[in-house]
Length: 199
Image 1 (cartoon, rainbow, N blue to C red):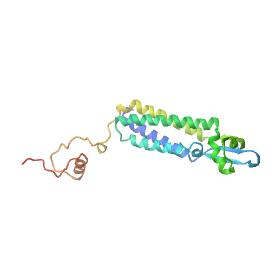
Image 2 (cartoon, rainbow, N blue to C red; image 1 turned 90 degrees about the vertical axis):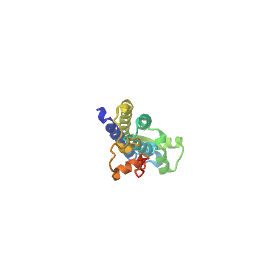
Image 3 (cartoon, rainbow, N blue to C red; image 1 turned 30 degrees about the horizontal axis):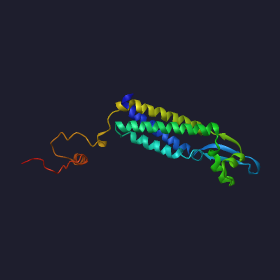
Image 4 (tube, rainbow, N blue to C red; image 1 turned 180 degrees about the horizontal axis):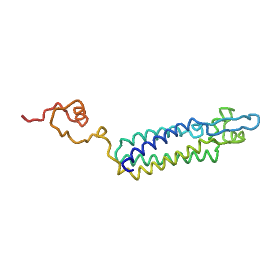
């Protein structure tokens, strides 16, 4: 299990980010207006929670970066992922269970031209929730669990591959260099064309 900890963490975090971004495009709320303006409106996730898509993209990037970073950044990224997961789960829960006026104000204003929290709240008759807030809450809880897993197992992850390291051991063979070896030498700051033979 520990041998695959990096791979598991990366896959789960990337998937959480992807679902977070996708949920921002889905309908979260159905709003029924009252009075002369009575009609139904829909509110997408990105409108209900403006930071949903940007933080989802951040989680995606963080997950990909985890596949190559060293020990210190594993802990840093684990903490960041945990913070994002907690914040996003809290915001999604607010929208799902409390239906704050701020979540629907922009949509109501676009449809009616009426602004102000009090005026918008007076126009809203009912707000119903789709399945997407619940799905998103579950995704962010999973992200929190994955972040904790990263923090617990990061020290035991296998080292990153040679192609991501600049401190690789010097070339053991004294034979002729091929194109790949020459490139690796240059990556380490060595000039493969320099002759170190003192003769």
